[in-house]
Length: 136
View 1 (cartoon, rainbow, N blue to C red):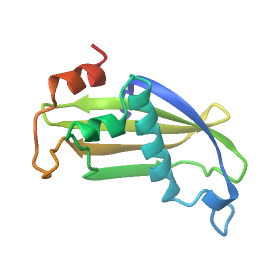
View 2 (cartoon, one colour):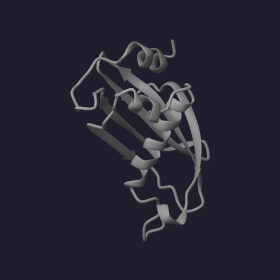
View 3 (cartoon, rainbow, N blue to C red):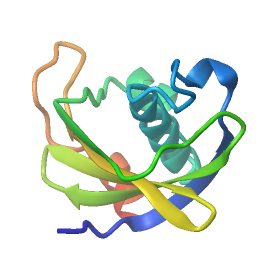
């Protein structure tokens, strides 16, 4: 089942040599780093940063993630990371991701995040942040 990426953003990344493994493909764990960069940029494009959210005492730890590898990216490939919100609950959110090369989706994934305070206790999404997330 394909998730719908709500208000998706895109960012381009040139695959560096350091991102690849001995087989010349992007090391599988690096896709999670690409996802994190996409999430950060998704928030930034809404005029709000992770840093600002953390300064307000709101944290979004990852509690679940998934990555489906369809085709490898290789050194010097230009890839696009599409990021979008796929679900927003009262105290949690989920992001979906697509990694695209040459107009073809090569990797998909998601991350789930509870909204917690500095003591790592679950909290409802503050109204200000809910508006930013939902695009209101």
